[in-house]
Length: 300
Image (cartoon, rainbow, N blue to C red; front, side, top):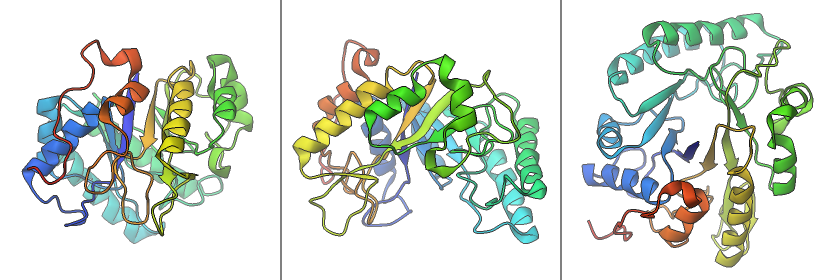
């Protein structure tokens, strides 16, 4: 089962630019130490040294293209050109297990009603499959799937009982694709059930600490005790859902106003790493538990 975490790749001292090669390696090590076997790099094509450490240390990567602001001839031409450069640069990295050209219909905001936008998603899906037939392509992650190998669903419902009912077993899929609207959007377009496709809950969670002033999250906890309780309850349900082939928890670190990370921005864990590991991986993580790691952000 894919156990991924959403990672936007920001650092407090340097923004999108990694402060050092050691910081990149440490992010991979921390991700693995928390029980994740993969990472979804969100709206960022990461520097090659991150992919190098993911190759060497063993971490799967979903590589996602940053989104255009709107649909236009210019945005289509520029994004397509740059996406091909991404594929050519990174295709040889064994850590990459999926390509994601679109996220949440950004840059293609009218997919249900616009044939040109649907054709654009199909075009990049098939262009990617032509360039690299060996990997899955997630045409539009989150909802409104048009052409895809994996149906990625973004669902920030904080009620774990509703999450369980929505994704419990394979026999819920016809209802899921026909009637459910996580994020207010249809999960698939043009009437295809896509029952043969693997399903990944590719964004969920988003639990923030209320104690952080000016912060934001999809759900908020008043203190660390409540944070651990809500986090544990949700993951206990998600890890057992038979309809899913994997999940991606939001998110790895606090990022500016988004205080919904498992780590603070300086990479200090909000909960002990061994606690997070048990919640994320449980018995699937192997008998040895999390690998030892120095957790202070200032010890490098």
